[in-house]
Image (cartoon, rainbow, N blue to C red; front, side, top):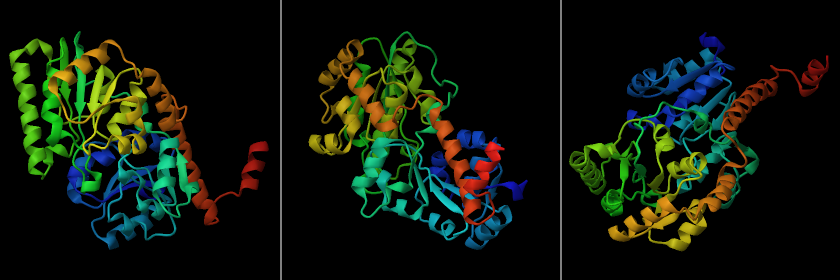
Length: 384
């Protein structure tokens, strides 16, 4: 079987970042029904985590020598990358494969239009917004490398994590602090506690706290302390009103939570755009850590169809949340904004685009090496 694997997903980081590849595993399993797919891992501990999550073959290659030997053994044609790990460059050494960046979400964070994109033969993006982001943010970047595939994960229907409730469910889903100040959009250590208090004060509400997976292992004291306090606030609220169903969920797929929520408070991250796609008809609240409304409006288009939270007055936010649950004035703006980020894609379309795009690249790689049919030969075969 190994020598038949034409496409691999490559992952070089430690277990705390395996969520980046884990969200792709169901999609890759669908791809495997068309093209044999393998997973290549550099960190043995990450391999243990991922083997428990998928039926796909998982290969471990800690050293560059082992990686090179593995690629030769598998005769890999296309490599998929879900992040920009520094160790990606060891994989990119090979010029006999096509290298494709697929990322692990669609968001307006600065890291989403990285100069690293120039290293890959193709970069799969969600839609118009991502194309514009790369064109505006990078110098001398060939936008012909961009392939609009949507976001296949949003076609999946994971089993729900929330029990049905007659209450209005408000999701607070903050991101983590990032690897650098420029990419720090989290609200946890600034207004997170006040956001939770404001949500809990909304009549007939159920709060669900679902932070980014990296929050639980944060090394930033202010983030770690605020996270624990938020967990305590939710726990205390649940203890005082067990019938409400207040929950903190630190492990699990947020896509299994979003469909059962009525509003969401989040930061600049992929979660907000997942909500825009899946829950276009429900209100969203976006935090502004940097207190720069004009910058947010210019750089974060989704902010134009959301209520923006800067400094929090608990009473005012409670009133605003209550008002939006009753009358959602941004609905039509979100419909237009969904088109900006995801084109006209409907559920199911992204997966088809992704499968077709990878298949075409496998064929292209063979053609470039003289191992596959020419376009004329393919045309003759079709008309025969």
